[in-house]
Figure (tube, rainbow, N blue to C red):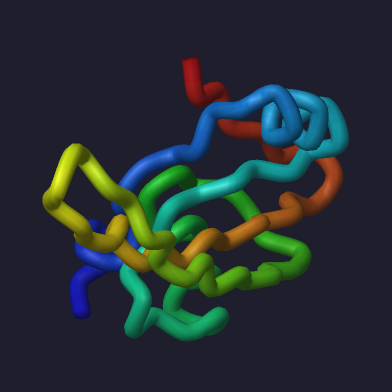
Length: 91
């Protein structure tokens, strides 16, 4: 897997904005990626040093629109803590 295939997009929420003040970013990543691949991808793409990586698998939720029922997509989130002196601007 290429580095650009591992990281899909940043997750911008109120909680992730608060975490950004603590040198932590939240990313949506490929569900098949492991912590080592995520760390290598972030270090290669953003040219920063990563301290730790925590992952969360978000299960799909059931949704309905009228008589049609379906599910949302499953997502894997990565909470990446950067080392002191490293930062990423996700504006």
